[in-house]
Image (tube, rainbow over all chains, first blue to last red; front, side, top):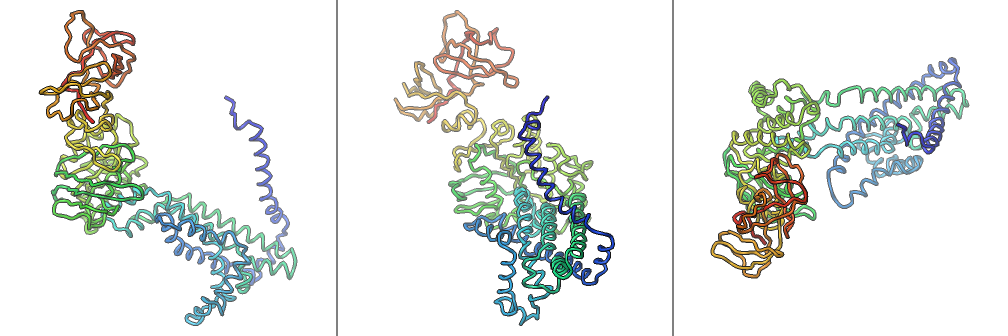
Length: 269
Length: 359
């Protein structure tokens, strides 16, 4: 039987438009890859400050994603379970970092978390930790711009848990904490990992706010910008390719980690 | 396992725009109370309130000597079986059951023995390592019951566990639950909107409508003498007619509906002469017979024309016209040489003792 939908002109036109979009994503990345010589990649790869920048970016993004889980999961649970007036406003607040320019984020963080900021000054005074031009500053910027991904992914997970499953666990003698740890968390595990993955990717790619609050120590995106300003396209594009491959590798690794394993493993004795 | 009875005393719950009004009932150990009601009547809210998920606005809940209202859900020892069973999808059958063991037993040999015993008792031993998604409906129910039994509950609550299942399986599972509950000897409440399920399971029956318990009693009482027209239609009394009290007799009355006069036998007839009433009869209580020319006519007996005949399980559902529109259930073979085809004339009788007058 003829498939009416798939053979219609509408479907054909939409395929063409969609194909253009896919090409738009892939062509620049492909161009970046083919524009390099092995020599230029090797030359950039052995630079110690490039290596440092990459390692710093990975470390900071990983720590950011962990902090985001610790802070974001409780909020996501509250947004999913509690019903109160003003819920919509809280949801909107969570999404603010997605909507404002990242240079604005950098300026705002600088004002509050800088050495003289309302939070930055006391933190510096009591703990000696400065957010200005420091690793902590990098993590702070990454956290601000990527936290919506953690919260929203976890929120979707919590929304999808059948409440009857949590209720029956309570009637079986488990208190709220045991239900959360033994039942709810394993059921939202995949959503949390999706959030972790997106947060990690978003953190690694952050530039706009970091360049204002913590230009140094240089993260990979800042280093690429630095190379571009100092030495032009050749070195910066070689480093860009290295970052691109690394990012894709991590992305694919996590996808495999997510979907190649059973969601419950490690959670039940 | 304590063997106390469950007592709800003028229970009131407010939940958003919904309310449960003054629900009072009691269930004895070993007794099954079925709460019947349409969707949105408040059946689930009632059960979840007993289980501790909604705050009481007023009233009390006692189980034996225990004041349940003061306890958290995990302290109430209630075996709650939810719609579709709510098994833990990330745990296998054995882990589902072990989750319910008390902390003191879970990791000890005592707990292992108890879990194995439950697996055996519910014929689940060979399924111990299966995940819920790989189980049939009947197997899921056995896991849910075994899991609930692991907590040694003092009360069982069932919230339409068969809602997503085939009609045939439902009846088998109802019987299984009834046997298990009789064995456990604790009070049980089972809510459903299915009157067949209610009949199979119930020792007593309550009807819930808009948050109020509008009738309770034994099954026969509710099914054949519903308190009002809503309950009557909900419990399958398909024949409900408006009429007025025409004459009051020592042991009943005569009700006029349309052009028909119906003789009613009802003790304690409490309506007044001329009062508008509803009159109802269950389809299975109507007698059909072949038309004869004997000329002798009993009371409440007429000739009627068959409008339609529809197979209905082991019965036929026959719609007839005799001044009133009437629905009757008869066995498939027909009786007394009746010709069960549309257009045929038959004799029908509405036995006076089965006709019920209500508001």
